[in-house]
Length: 106
Image 1 (tube, rainbow, N blue to C red):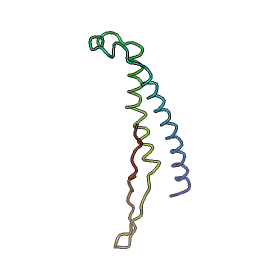
Image 2 (spheres, helix red, strand yellow; image 1 turned 180 degrees about the vertical axis):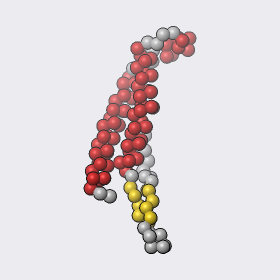
Image 3 (cartoon, rainbow, N blue to C red; image 1 turned 90 degrees about the vertical axis):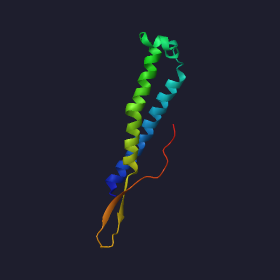
Image 4 (cartoon, one colour; image 1 turned 180 degrees about the horizontal axis):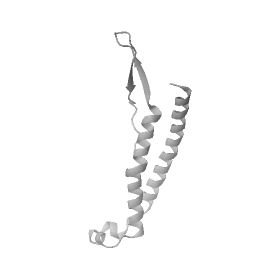
């Protein structure tokens, strides 16, 4: 691994920590806001949306569609390693190494 690659992976690790804090903060906002009557009653679901429902929807969509996939993709890049395998023919072959660490639970 080159120095530039090592620096880039270290920088990605910092960005990941910030994104994880952002995700945690959004989840706290979502959990801290009680369900609206519209979200509790199926009959009210067809009426116009209220502020609480929109906040819940926006946060949950942002996490599921953007923040969580972004964290997963950047984490994979930040821990990616190339393993050099010596085949019997004497030529060097490169094989990507998978990370075996467990993901942090939400």
